[in-house]
Structures are given as C-alpha cells and as structure tokens.
Image (cartoon, rainbow, N blue to C red; front, side, top):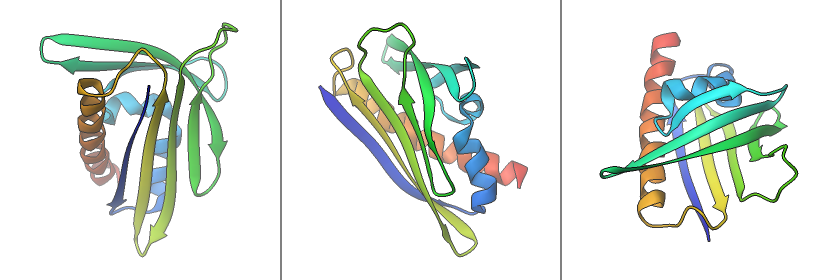
Length: 144
C-alpha cells in the first residue's frame, strides 16, 4: 500500500528563515502535531515518533530518518533504519523557492508499506500537514 500527502504553500518569510526549521527534525515537535518526539541519533539521523489519533484510537510509529538531500532549494529525509532489516519506505521532501520576499515550499510525504493503510490514517496525515503549515506560519511570525 502506498500513499502521498503533499502541499504547496507560501510563507511570508525568507528562505533563510524557513530553511533551518525544515532541515532540523528536532524542531518538528514544536510545529508538526503528528510528530510527538524527536531525538538525534547520529549526525544527519534522528529517531522520530509519529502519533496519529483517529477517534478514540491512536497509532504511533517510530522511524529512524536520515537527511539524505540538503541543498539550497531541496531537503529530503528518508527512512534509514540501522537494524539491517527491510522496512516500509518513508520519505519527506521539501522543494523551496523565493517568490519575491516570500518563500514557496512544496512538502511531500510518501509512504510505501503494509502497516499504515489509506483512509483514516491518510486523512489524519493530511490534517496533520494542514495543521503543521499553520503552526509553522505562526512560528515564523514569532521568530522573524
């Protein structure tokens, strides 16, 4: 099973303000509601816990994510577990560009595996991404 959740939004902030928040997973619990915790593992790697609530039920998943692309306009995190086993594919990528004094960001979250099925979980991820956009917007206003 596979699904993709994506959004393109503009932030009233420069890329120099937006980019550090996107490239550092340790900031995500501040502005991404579905990220319940993040701890740095080794350089460029983080242990990320996702938590999605659907009615009275909650589902959580721990992922070891690696920053696999990190340049001026693109940031990508891919799942890279260190236990030697095969795992479902998770990928989070951001494409950024200057739009005048604003920054356009396209965020794409891809999942390919069998544990999380589309439907309610995918809907919760869409809602979580919408909330993350608004919380990032507020965080940028507070800090810049």
